[in-house]
Length: 120
Image (cartoon, rainbow, N blue to C red; front, side, top):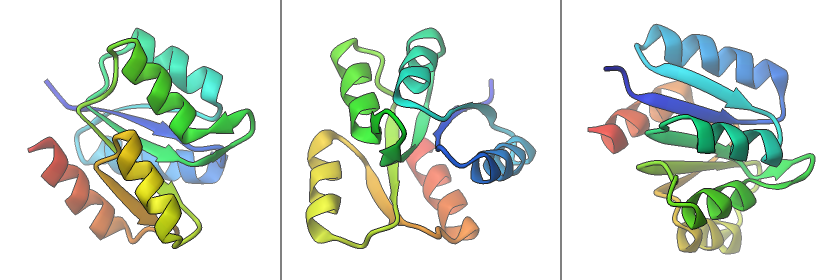
């Protein structure tokens, strides 16, 4: 069975590109653009890895991770994606349970390698 990835990203362009990329790589892909949608998908589906944008229209990506962790539905691994290379933001993400924090724009090869490593 293919590993399942939840893309939590408010940019339709990024979401669409990641959906195609990860689908072609053999993953089952789900997406959400808000905290509410991402939490709902995470509760309904079995998610192996979550790619988490930190800036969402109705809160932060860490709100999603917190809600899923509290309900026992957190994915095996979460990779936060941020537009800021701020050490404090990175530490906050790691403290919240993220396996890694990647700064946008994320090189696709690096992202695929990291996903493979985390799901291995």
